[in-house]
Length: 71
Image (cartoon, rainbow, N blue to C red):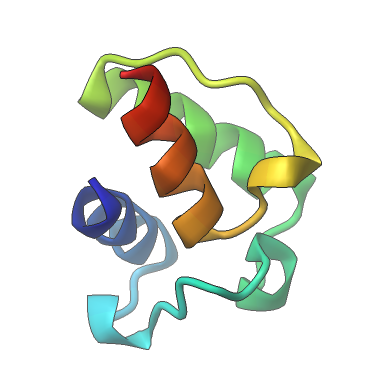
């Protein structure tokens, strides 16, 4: 699951997936609140899940764990 989220984020930011640090908050990856909202919608569409926007899931690691738990 984490790899898929990394791939989606890397495509969204137009960077190599290896550049994505999974333990860094999205804001430190250069995403603002609108970017995060768009990213969440894309993840929901591609993975067929419904995500709750929350500051608790502000890194790839935390978001992947949440998705795995609720998928």
